[in-house]
Length: 208
Image (cartoon, rainbow, N blue to C red):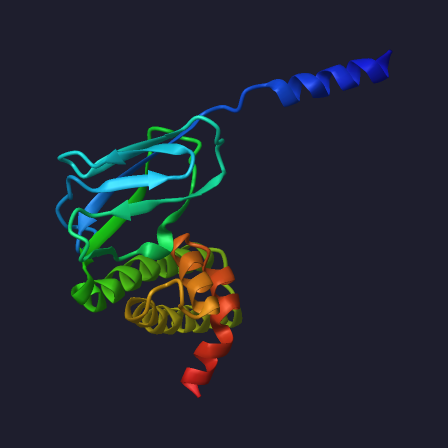
């Protein structure tokens, strides 16, 4: 009897509808403090395409996707000369808070990406590095050796950020070096230790 009850519960779970998930975002011009961009088409598999409003905002609804699923966002500016500056962030995890503004994407003209790309990656990644350093240093202030090592890790992270930001802006991230692409994505997520593990070898060779 218990066996049949367990099977019945599994069948019910399988038949239960997937809770729909939403992705809210905004398209900005050139940089994070830039003006919003209206009229940009935003789409992703599993959701109806939308066009950004006067505030540059969009809402994608995924009736068959759940919190934590990763979707690849496609951004199409009416002027085909525009590209996404932070295209490394086009793979987005659907949030648990459906009201949160999760995706902030920046567009600029293709010929200007060399200028805006490094600025974006350097700023966001450096912020993550500094926040991580201050959080971790609070717990080891009484340990000079550990604090010294943490400072070295921070300096290495700054170097990786600087070089990686330039690399990703110079080339399409689809063809960017795999380790740096992964490292920069981790930096942008605030996962500094994991990012360093991905890029320590190349950064160390630069120092030498």
